[in-house]
Image (cartoon, rainbow, N blue to C red; front, side, top):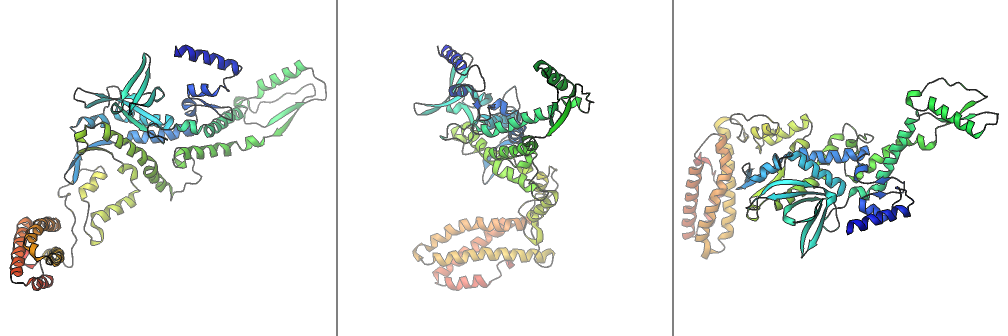
Length: 506
């Protein structure tokens, strides 16, 4: 009967400690997940949250994970598109189960990770083995274990122990020593957190006593013990506390009040509390200014610190989330096509001026080719698309109109021709394979030419790029094979290098 044995051990422990709950035996600390620190403060996940710095750190990180959209994507060629019809999309984006939204689930699991080092959710599957719901599990009721060479999860319930296989538990874990379970930050940081809690308690006592200097009542007369106790009781009744400050004191029997000043430990109270906030910021790897410690924050660096928070704190957790979701929420044949990703653009935004300067460069500033479109920029700013907003900007090279297009086109054809010349010079060294090489090379070179010329033709609304490239490829192959037959390949290459390759393809 394990429960009866535990009950007897608890009774014995209370006897050994004289009934003092502040000094239980080490096994009792482990049983209840409570660590008793050198300061005498007992710290566990619940008491730690009563320390404002811990609450803020946990709330900020878990809240950020919950608020960021977690989307499901499908790979399409070299790009991607949202897989809104896949079942996992709705589980992670809207409703993981009938009782909570996706943001609440992620926030809850991440808070479990921050406090216990592990966040667990049971993956409910349908008959086809696909996930249909995610149910959060209490982290203090779950124990990862290895049986028969496989990881399993043992869950303690009111009716006994339930075992779930590795594939049916979504497990987000913090830093650990075996890769199976994460450490509890609360247990490792117990001493620091206890100091913070003790400072809070000390502050409450200090201000509860009107924040006033301590003092003594003196008299030259001899007082009996019960008289001294009564005087002390009446004095505190009338003068102790914030709501009794500034009351007039009426002294009798030769009593005099003498202030003894503020003790050094109370004078350093605020400094001690501030140091505790910095400690918590280090434990949770969060910028101190996010915990309202602005001592080292300036208007010039606070924005960069916010971006660093995303890069060095959040990204670590986002990666853990997406890797676990990708592995356990998709069937094996789907993993090469589907994946999950958080949208972090909103958190990484700079101020308006720097953001717009970056857009200007991407759109094609300083007469350089653009690599993002107007509609892509408008999407980042949550604005609707505009007509012709999906076209890349192509710069002008001297003059305008047709002459600009011609100059740009000639430059592109030159680039295409230069690649040919270099490839041919290498291939001609193996004359026995040259004719076959020509056919193989130009089959690929045609795609390369289209990739170079396509955006240029599109910018001028010309639709003949495929026809022009196909004609160019056939002409080049014929010239090259004829030159090979007549042993004039080198002369042909020199001609290609000197020609204006775009003139006849406008």
